Length: 308
Image (tube, rainbow, N blue to C red; front, side):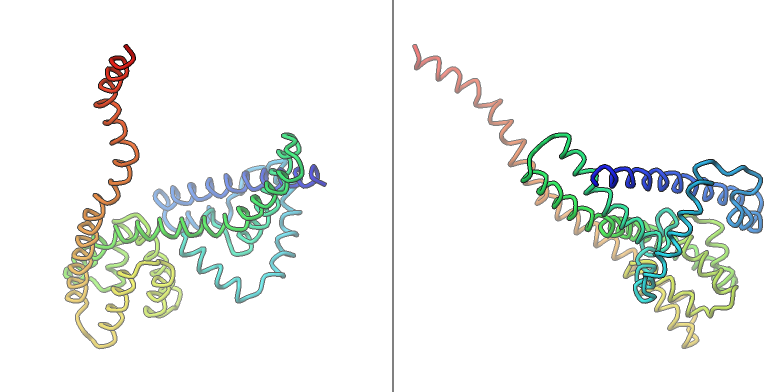
């Protein structure tokens, strides 16, 4: 049973590795096509990544099985759970282009893989029944926590990047609006000049507006996908200004100043926390080394004197 689980785990991991490589290659081609050939070429690459190329043997063998397994697994996922998980994936930047079904399959794979690998190594090391049970329990706990923790890390990292980009994005939007552009045209100028988390989200927002969504719905989607309180305040202010007929230039200028003030306050707070964080390395590592260097020769001389 252990060896069968191990073989199944290795097979799934190998296929997942090749699928991730394929996804990265397709994303790279899509970006290059968007730069060199325009949006239509990028969409062609995204929709037909395998066109003009013979699929590999691994893909021909495993793709039908994977497709059928994925279809059957999607039926077990409730619509409410899928919606919540999709929001979490979007907040994390949709790593590896995963859908909710793909993420659940990845969770299942990790939950099978880690205990299988731990049991395999426990059988090799021959650590006994108690050690094997401890290994198995540790693997189950890690496998249950790891995928969700990975999403949290990705969400936190993406939020930090978005918060760092926010002041420059607001400045560019303000300048574009002052130059006489409309809000949608200012967003187009922004996504053509900037790269990053916010540029990607506003590109998606603009595409949703062009596909028929209202501006309020599209900007509300940006608020849900980016976990940054400052950005949510900015978008709420934009929507309120649009509703009340207030000029957006003044609103964006005020919000930009507030975001920069908040960034300055966070920097000052981090600077005040730095001495407290340095205290533990000083006490645990630097002070003992200084004591050894300063008092070590004295202690040696003292011992030699009294031993004579």
